[in-house]
Image (cartoon, rainbow, N blue to C red; front, side):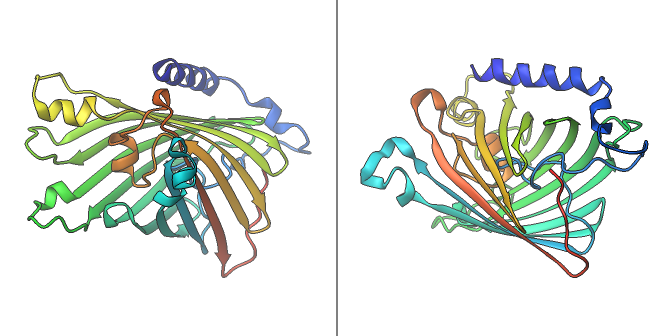
Length: 297
């Protein structure tokens, strides 16, 4: 089921990237090459980055909560007792470049990122898609009682984001490469690819689906390979975005309750097939020293 969904999203996304987006011109009085607005509702889809940028001079404060599996039932208040939180602060350096940092209670991880937009889809489709590069890095500071090598605490993510908006639909592909060292494993480069779809349900409400698949190394029969690949799963998240004034509320269900790229892309240890579904939400608030940022969904 997971593989089918990912292949479906990838094929649909690639097909639609080649089509003309004439419907984007409906309601305009003249042809324009201005960038299209609001491919996604927020700079994050469910947990991963979207191609949405923060404009120059705008700052965004984000509170993200993830909980345990809802199958724990009333004893754990359907996972609420296992709450994790990430606090993040993002800054628009220019309209095509943003940076951010955050702190995650999961393993006490600190993270930073930078994202740059090379291409921006335009209303007249003269530029048919959006292309961005994401660099993200994280460091784990949890104390284990024994010395952990730096490279086993450090992770680096390099990711391309390719997106297309057509009417109420938005599609995104995310080929990714992680640099990280696992204990007693002889490889430190790990590849994966993500796919996402957004559908605008109403003027201020949108549905999101996000999926990340890991590309496995050749099985060498070792315990390390089994631990890294066979004991983890691909992540799938489904969510709803609701915009209200300067706030965006994101509510979602996923088989991961982590919030840094290393963890939710490559170390998801839960699966939808076993009912291991976690509730989570993001709340973000934009602040601007210039004129108020306006979103057009």
